Amino acid sequence: MDKIGKYEIIRELGIGSTSTVYLALDPFNNQRVALKLFNSELLRDPHLARAQRKLLLTEASLAGKLLHPHIVKVFDAAMEGEVNYMVMEYVEGESLDHFTEAARLLPFATIAEVIYKCCKALEYAQTQGVIHRDIKPANILLCAQSDIKISDFGAAMVLNQQITQVSGVGSPAYMSPEQVNDHPLTSQTDIYSLGVTMFQLLTGRLPFDAGNNYSLIYQIMNVQPQAPSSLRPEVPPELDAIVLRAMHKDLSLRYQTWEEFAQDLVGFFNHNMVTHTEIFDMEKFDILRSLAFFRNFSDVELWEALRISEWRKVGKGEYILHDGDQGREFFILGQGMVRVLKQDRLLSTLCKGDCFGEMAHLSARDFTRTTDVVSESDVTLIEINPDVLEKATTGCRFQFDNAFLRMLVDRLAVANTRISHLLSGRMEHKGG
Image (cartoon, rainbow, N blue to C red):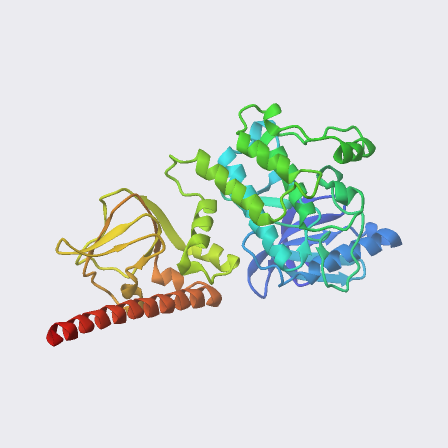
């Protein structure tokens, strides 16, 4: 097979019970894509064909809607007689299934970061009215060290959509009690499924061991899962607690929101990774979300800001900029304090969230620094190259410009207040 529709087939990537996935080339965009071709044999059974087409239609309806760095993009879909296919973003990497085997388990920090990114992606999907309904390791792709992409939204429940949802979908081992019972679903069903996924990543085992689906469903409904550490003693107690809360059968005791889930993962990180020198993406995202500079950025724009910035930790007393340096990079303090000096005289002290070096960027030309900047404490520094920022999306650039405008207005207001106080003091002195 050389071609499907307009897409030129390069090679087969994988084959499953319902479809075959190919690496293909979109000749119009000269871009590699993943093309999922549905099994034509299934389409000869009217009942199966109807269900498969609904799944395809559901996922196709999300094309251009779920635009998030941790969700696989859907570009195109076609239903042409027996030729039914979906065209998606091609992601190099392995599914998390690969890392649920005892010999391939990921480090705890990586698992925490992977699950954190899943939380943020599924939180975004929820804001778009989408519940995935089939979260499991096979539907989460790991690319690079800890970057993930959630795929396969064919089983998704899309709120306020005219398409009839297919019932009874999902993978039994990852289904929540309410999904097994065919009760109305909320995002808490995906939270449960992600909890099961996290359990499996930590232990290499599923929480319920059953010989058949009847036994499995009974356990999901009636048996409390054991803590991951009972299968793998080195699992930290914080991760035990996170998994068990995510998998709680009582909805009132399960995580109510993705943000609660994500913040407990950040808490684990902050408590257990104090001495590490590397700055993990979940730390970066949490820092950006806490800074006033980024308060108007959407989550998607924050992930982009994270990607285009350079991060590093600086010890107390180190020079970050020197008077006379050339450069156009600007900096935002993620954590800590710095002193701004001119010939060793203190001009100002900057704290978490403050920006410096921005005049070099705003001048849009080669710039000579006119002050020294020295760390007053241990500092987490966010550095942004204007040339890289220029290649960012329009939305991301707009938010940076808006943040700079707010910052300049605030500084002008402070300067005006100081001038007013100075003039008032002089008038009082003359009057005296």
